[in-house]
Length: 365
Ligand SMILES: *Cc1c(COP(=O)(O)O)cnc(C)c1O
Picture 1 (cartoon, rainbow, N blue to C red):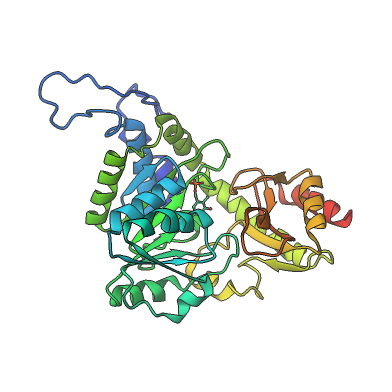
Picture 2: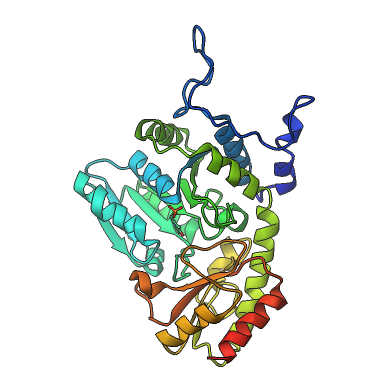
């Protein structure tokens, strides 16, 4: 069910006592006043922090499930994986999704006896999950924007005795709700649109499986991969405007994508909201919005660089989901894409102002 973001904005207010601040206080303390028996009290900063708890309360409202926060998206992905794999586990991951997840699997998990198999995003819909204990999903994939049939895959993996983990970073819980589609565990980099202001790194794990969440919590406590209270406070603040930001970003992305598709300088375009896009049917079936990420390919690497670096409304930067539109050539990081392939993250600028800047820079190439 879609989260009620109005209710979310008043979650804290409706639980306040007279005289308490409306805005969330920042609890920046490693120690707590703890005389005598510590039963039920906050004990130590690695275990308890009121600012995380308020943030997790808000996130749980958005996700419709308990949430645990981490100091980055990779912190959340590591927690979800270390909580669910052991020596002998067979793990399936996409070969064309967020690349650091693959590095984690290859460089660390496989050395601990986890057998890692990679498969292209578009091949997941063909099934073949027998023998896999954990299947890691990402839809739409970053940066290719290919989608997976999440309900079909989640039920096929479950029928084969496995567990699914989905990376929902690109869509946020307002755009797609993998838990409602049958996925067991969802991970997110809240560094992106969730925070939205390019000023923090964080991530979260959510699941309706209490055993898994207990294990994720234990991992956080024992590994020490805890979020900083200040980042938690910033993310809490960012989430209060997620609905307006995400709405603006997705609406603008649709308009920009349609116009880019008609522009003579653009060789190819991917945006799940375009009727001709390979991801369109799946996006219509399982997402609430088509997202704020799109990609274009120009004629050459030089033109792509000139476009990114000359447009006054594109920040040439890696990462995405901020209020400022940004863009980059993914080939510069070794992604298996055309050298002239550009991922564009549509921000919160008024759409006509943004389009004029994009069009002028394309026309000048
Ligand atoms: C950025 C990103 C991550 C990693 O998040 P960090 O906050 O940078 O650790 C994971 N998955 C996807 C899809 C991402 O875009």
